[in-house]
Each structure stands twice: as structure tokens, then as C-alpha cells.
Image 1 (spheres, rainbow, N blue to C red):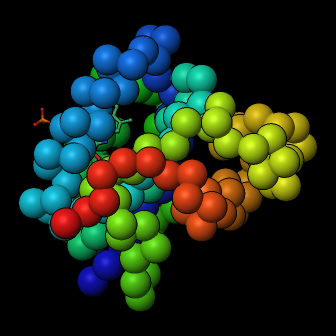
Image 2 (tube, rainbow, N blue to C red; image 1 turned 180 degrees about the vertical axis):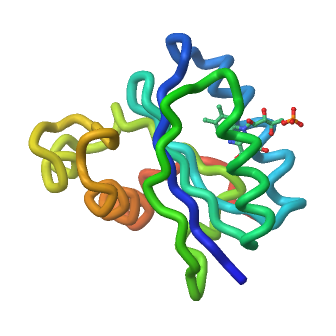
Length: 143
Ligand SMILES: Cc1cc2nc3c(=O)[nH]c(=O)nc-3n(C[C@H](O)[C@H](O)[C@H](O)COP(=O)(O)O)c2cc1C
């Protein structure tokens, strides 16, 4: 059975390229063996990650990620059964929201900035869907 999990969190330290690179490296190394796909979106110190895969695998990974000391304020936005993957093309894609068109952010938010902690999860999920369809997600395609 397939599920999709999405959460938001805040980096504990200012997010640097090496820290983000290390997270993406371990994700791209380990997610394929667990059949997990998805992407990690960063905006300043905010992370939003979407994980898709089997219920056991996604649950185990989410629990591991949620206790990672590199981030805090981990907040679930969605955990739902899905008939099919939406983000199956990425072992762990990456979106840098600084490179995303301001009008796309304004479409779903009061200001052209992301705040998944105050806005509705539905608005954040709609934005993530649109990011996938506008090819804003970068990264190695899954095998
Ligand atoms: C924001 C964030 C996203 C992460 N995403 C993943 C992921 O998709 N897959 C993964 O294996 N580890 C991910 N990690 C790293 C895990 O928390 C953990 O450090 C890594 O899987 C190694 O786990 P282990 O040391 O218990 O073996 C993420 C960490 C953070 C902070």
C-alpha cells in the first residue's frame, strides 16, 4: 500500500550547501532500496519534504528523520494513502524556492514567501503539486 507523507521543519543552524548536500546524498543513497521517492524543498531555514512509498517504509523513514538533530519544529502536513505516486521521478529531488517564480508563491500565499507553519496544509500541498508540474524540481531521476 502506497502512502504520501509531507512535513515542514526548520533547520537548527543556518542551512549551508554542505549540510543540504549531505542530506540529499544520504537520501539518494538510501531511499531507492526502500522504494521511497519524493523531494526536499528549501526556503531560508525552512524544509518541506514529501516522501512517497510503502506505508511501513515511509513511516520508518519519517520517524528517523523527525528525530534528526539538524532540524526542529517538525510538523506533519499530510500522511495519506494514495492510489499512485505523484513524485515518483525523483529518489530525492530538490527545490530551491528562491529560484521559484514569485507569482507562483503569491498564487497560494498572502505574500511571496513560504510559511508552511501558518498557512493551510492544503495550500502548501497545492504549491508542491505545481512545483512538480512546472519542472522546478531538480535532481537525479529515480531508476
Ligand atoms: C530535512 C531532512 C530530510 C532528510 N531526508 C532523508 C531521506 O529522505 N532519506 C534518508 O535516508 N535520510 C534523510 N535524512 C537523514 C536522516 O535523518 C538520517 O540522518 C539518515 O537517514 C541516516 O540515518 P542513520 O544514521 O540512523 O542510519 C533527512 C534529514 C533531514 C534533516
